Length: 497
Image (tube, rainbow, N blue to C red; front, side, top):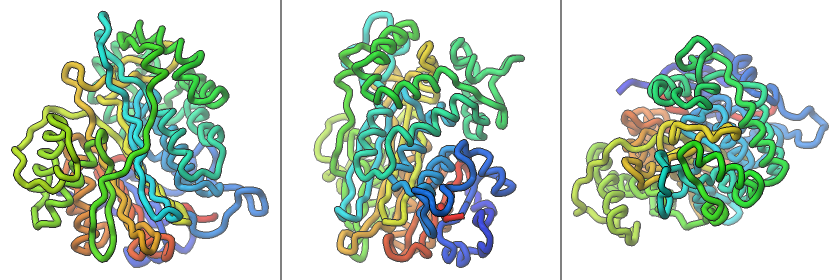
């Protein structure tokens, strides 16, 4: 397994090199991306390189938190929200909408996801679930059945958990990125290269992702999405409910029929996000670790793998234990906590599982969020909703489409009201061990965060990780955020400039 790539120092004067320097400096700008400097990072941000000017509303000085995401432009949007005085919840909402523009192969208005939120005021973690909805029946003529979209409603539900900035303000950066354009990232370019043939057969997808001379856009090329910008603007002005029981809902019902998805108004109206209790396990020294609960069952797999590693299992055995727990739950349901502790489940093998993407973010108060998103397939159904500008997610349970293994975790200590670790991972069947491995090595065996990520996240997992060695709130100088160097994401600190 390749080691960690060299990382740039923090994008501010006086950043010290080396692990000790990074920890003393707080959360640093770490990158799997070969970024030449801070000007390149700033250029990706549609809101500019700095937060509000000193003396203006929203100006905050000092440590503000950190963010790691699988798309650099989305991470910059979240960092800007933290710099403007927003909470981790605000930053996660803004970054999630931005990823629907900048990484539409894995995140989109037509899809959904799941998030964990740790609130130090409550000394507890809760899950916000908004998975792309399964279809009760597949209408005749739906050659590519679409999942019921829930991203917008889900991010609105996430925003209710502890916001400071207006929801409409948090949607604006994504709308600007879609309207004025953004560069195709390395991650999106790789996804386009993998499926460009069938994807570009859809005329609407060709208009967004294709090059004038043929073929898919390459990394660094400009991508404009005016129809998506209009949809985001409508949601910002009319509210996210418009997609479920308003003008947008009626339009979506009509255009999804022509795209082979065949969504109905009744399905759109009744699709709602939910709040749930995570799978919550004891760790060490009074710590606990919360995982996403089913139906976001990648969290169940990660919890079972974590429990296996607690018992001494290696990464391979822990991976198999996690996948066996998911297979058992998908076959028969039942109590996920019982499955986590069951060591006698039959081995499970999955066919190709859907792609996903993740982000983590925390703020100066110790509020922390870990989110995973999916379209239930790379580029969903491969067809854009005509006139609305977003890809329809693939309906799970139809044909060969299975639900994605959305995997995320937060480790915390209720007694001191602080969090210690955030993790989220993509990588199809490897996503659960991409969460469980670094978490177990860091929490149970005391590895430093970098080595825990290096040794605990086997390919094809791509992990976003944050560790606060002395918890947060408390010692921000002991916090570090990391992005998997094999991916195309970035980890950024948010410090007053």
